[in-house]
Image (cartoon, rainbow, N blue to C red; front, side, top):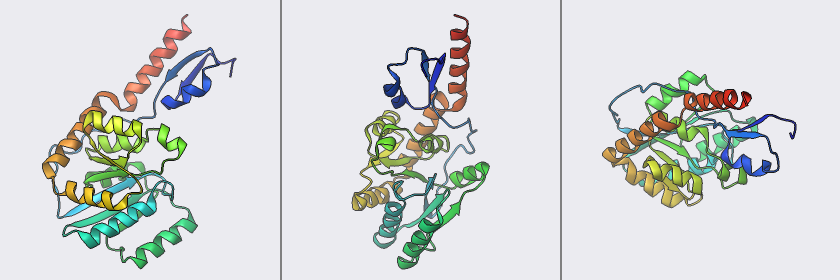
Amino acid sequence: MKYLDYIIFAEKSYAESYKHISCQKIEVLNYPTYQKRTYKHKIFSTVFNIVYVGSITEDRGVFEMLEVISMLKKQSDSQFKLQLVGPIAADLDEKIQAFIYEHQLHEIVELHGRIPYPEIWEIYAHADLGICILHPLPNYVKSLPTKLFEYMAAVLPIVASHFTSWEQLIEEHQAGFTVDPFDLETMAAEISTYSKEKELLTKMGNNGRKAYEEAYHWEIEAQKMIQFIYTTSEK
């Protein structure tokens, strides 16, 4: 790598590993492409839809999400639904289906599998809360998942693991709330409470969308990368 002219980091944390390389460096972050806002005013239905988009694995919190939706079904008077969108390994799919059968969740958990990208935004349009409760593995703790910014783009308030960088992002923009990904009772209670606060949820969603439009979409990062390359190549 010492022979390179540029290094482009897709995560801010990556730069720590390359301090000994003296070439030009820049962070170009993996934000989602720009998406137009699909509606001006949120309309809530009688069912509170929670959505997760991404690879579905145990360390990304699939069983914690299933446990929480099971608790909400038992403990709350409101109706909840969990939408899981993303690829699932065959052996894990069997375990998930067994959990759904055991806890009688087939009516409130929907597994979409891998779907075309435009269809994800259709699901976002009918969701009420975006969830991202990854386990505290080193790679997750130091990264900012693209799905957080997609939730912002979709005007969805966020519930996410209470990692420092995630908390800073969400609290700075007042775009949701963070939780201990293993404290399931508290998580279920907080989701239940927030689900009743429609005005607050709407405000959080709008805050996230504003932040996305101003700072967190790919067109901004692309221009930064192009400017960096042209400027440094002229030296």
